[in-house]
Image (tube, rainbow, N blue to C red):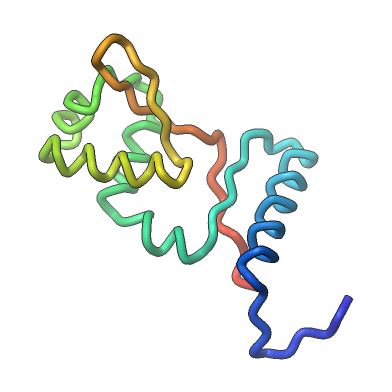
Length: 117
């Protein structure tokens, strides 16, 4: 393995491969369903309000719809919907559909932020 200098920055492609390798290693170690995101994505996406959404969905009580989630969080429906869209875009939540209702739920069993180095 090549010696890394302090200013070494892996390419985006190398970082994607490193996250994939980490997810595979976690799965081999018994942590099935791990989703690894970059530190930059974590900083951008995992805001305190979005953590509230994740915590609410993680608690286990099923959420029937985006509207019911917004009511449970005492937040504006539109803001919750936008936050859910961003979380879905990054593979953190997904939706079950029942007619017109979209039921948000956590997508991965484990969410891991890539190591800094």
